[in-house]
Image (cartoon, rainbow, N blue to C red; front, side, top):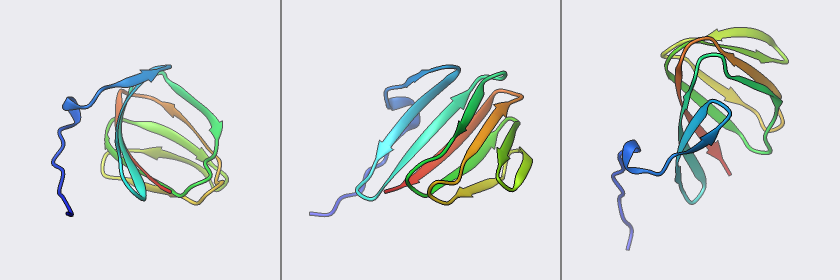
Length: 102
């Protein structure tokens, strides 16, 4: 029978390291993560095999991509094609929601 889940981020276990704390909700065709990142954290250049969206809820970060550099602020959404490289420096404590499509 189809079901509906109602989840509170703080009820999920946190994993992390390197200045970031992650909570994940896995789905059948996608996953959703809340990521809380400390100011000063750097995410080195990397890419993913899947399409990815980032929703910026709070904070400030500098994102570098093939297209250039942009400051990420609350209310912004970023979409990455599979294999699109990116790197980031978090200038303030930042909260993101990440959507990964399988």
